Length: 170
Image 1 (cartoon, one colour):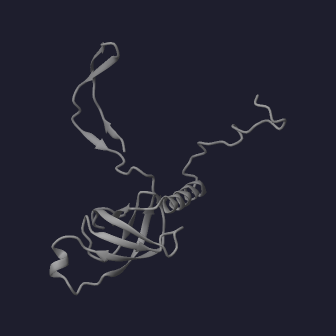
Image 2 (cartoon, helix red, strand yellow; image 1 turned 135 degrees about the vertical axis):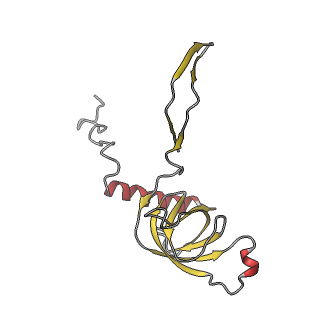
Image 3 (cartoon, helix red, strand yellow; image 1 turned 90 degrees about the horizontal axis):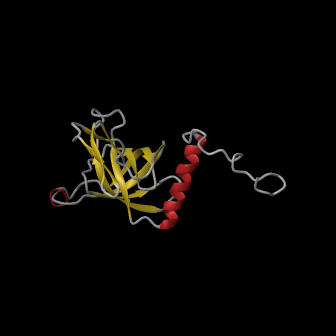
């Protein structure tokens, strides 16, 4: 992620290296919490809900298998909406993740945003113990979706880096 803030330079000093002394900002905004880029996605997954803590003792007759509508996905986790009550730190076994087919993936609930608080409200999960192969499959899926939706804004021009037809590097 990155932090955004406004401040003023109070002093710069050469102490063998240049140091900048800044005023303490009044407001700091965390621009992006996620470590991995996510792309929007539509579809349905199924999940097995494994509550953590006191909920497991008091609600023995709860439904364990649920469905959810996907919101976004990245190599670190995903977002979805569901009617199932879940809490932060609960474990979920997910099935139906695009590019993984019927493979079961474990995830931990890290956030819940009520639909009234955010139009894209939903559940945020972080993948737990994801194999390198599965992470690569998701990364490939995310990259393909970004290229297809032009989210790369033409940042990479393959013709700019191509070798001349005679094979020399000009």
